[in-house]
Length: 422
Ligand code: NIG
Ligand code: FE
Image 1: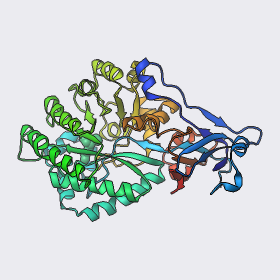
Image 2 (image 1 turned 180 degrees about the horizontal axis):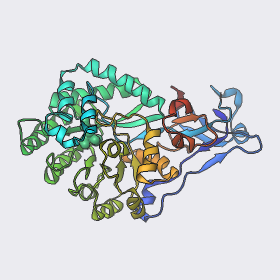
Image 3 (image 1 turned 90 degrees about the vertical axis):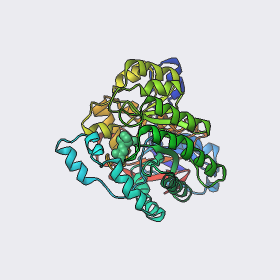
Image 4 (image 1 turned 180 degrees about the vertical axis):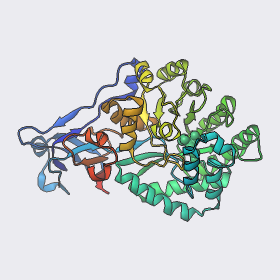
């Protein structure tokens, strides 16, 4: 029982209602303490939220002597654990030298075409042992947890060959089982076209070799993946290749969740709608048609403000998406290009660069991000029946988590995952 809080931020927006009816997103509901009576959250033995109410009301429904643990929150704020809807957290090495090149004017694709970017990281990741990748991810997971992330989407995609892609997924699966952070794993074998082969050849390899092998590994219980991703981009995998890869993934039971319309307006959003994708990410270059299409299909738009920031791109037209009734989610895009693990910073950038309101940013980093991962009914909000993922925030109001940028280590004083303090 977390008791004595000044605010419990519930987040009640239902992303499917938002999309289907084209209604504006509902703002978050805040339960506040009054007249010295605190508010709190009661979590059951299965790690599910049992009640969100004033301390007096909770006392009436529960035998205090039977409560395993009471945490006195002392006037702090309780918020839902944050959900990061897009990350690439398994890799070896870094690319700080490329950051310097980009600051000096090189574009993302120029660096990649010169053999850097994803190719550089792929080389390092292929060379790294599974153990080394795991050790590196343990550190990343703890950093993310400290920044309030309790659930994240995480991709493979720095192998490009079958064995390394499977190695990356196994690291994610092991971490999900061993660490107090929940992971929705994504197969992203179509992240780049390796040097020396054409996009067509690589598409054939993904569809005819990698995906069937992934299916047999999954059937044997040796690996788990939930989503299929591809970098749908001019000069990488274009629309037809992306459609083939995503459809093949869908046929083995994966949810479609991919990179689209980042650098060029190729029609990634339209493809997402056609395939009834759960999510499509980036969308800096989304068209008006694409916006309408994903509003209708209910595909969640995953916005990644760190990418636009670090590559100095035009931010995606988030206001137009929200007005069209698109469910918008946020992700850190953590990867060697955009080295950010902190969702509070991402929400801040979303507000300033993409003109989202504080409530919209919070919804996007909680319930809508959970919806992008097929967990919109169980995660991302503090309401009875959902998973007890809670942040304790030392601030007078919840908005300070976004307002005070770069301060989340000081603000988030405890993280609770499934009812356990981690
Ligand atoms: O989402 N655009 C493609 N993929 C990543 C970047 C990966 C990398 O540069 O290593 C992204 O920004
Ligand atoms: Fe990405």
